Image 1 (tube, rainbow, N blue to C red):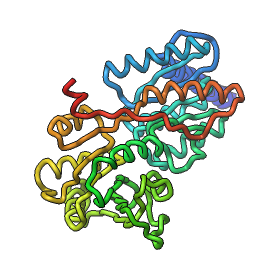
Image 2 (cartoon, rainbow, N blue to C red):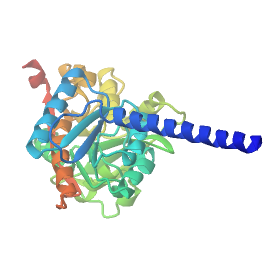
Image 3 (cartoon, one colour):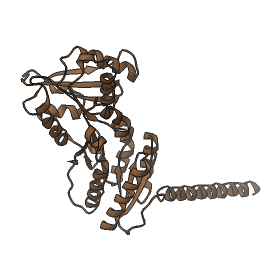
Image 4 (cartoon, rainbow, N blue to C red):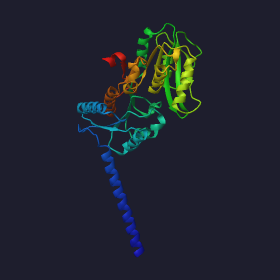
Length: 344
């Protein structure tokens, strides 16, 4: 009898501990997703999951989210996480909360970094909009809003008037996947190469320039740049060696900040010597690469307008939740920063 009584006491104790644990977990979830909620409207609850932001940038995002929340009667919440793991943890919790939709500015653009968590959100019926950079697997999101090929092609075509006649145009990208870091270079000339095979290009963003090519320039040669040893420094040395074997480009157009930084550094310190491009344009942050613009090494810096993309993303998510169609991809344009603008 005593044994039965003790067993009942143990069972009751375990149940109480479980209830307390679940209660604390529920309170944790509520506090986690209530930290920066904007007290506007009683409509859909949209979570904006962003990387860490500077104070001024954070203020701009909060002001924009406040305007959208007031306009559509939404509950918009902003959370910032500086790491992939931090963002993944938040995304894994989302299906257990009252969040109706997610706008994600991902720290990484690698599918495997977010695949499990975003698949869980989609399985729970939670729409996801991506800004700034997209994933290869389009099923991970409902829509991508960010700078795209049309904006990039417009910048390239406007620059072609200023390059040496007959000089090559090189468009490059950077990726870091399971096989390690690499640069991909697409050399374009004013003559067609009927034997060019676009399937060899790994970067989807780079591949689109084969069919949607700049005015009178066609894909001619594809080059993969890898390093014999690991590390960005070794990769950059391989990049310099590769470019020194090529005809100097009239225009080098970089689709990623690491490549833009590598090219700017090599041109600035003389490592490229006479092999430096006549014009260097690429993606990158003004804070990190602004000095190269002032020195005339980078002619124009391309900065995605993530704030504008996020504003569109919130509107898209509101439309998706109301059953309206939204395009799977939207090119939201870019901002160009030149030396003249910095001087002004």
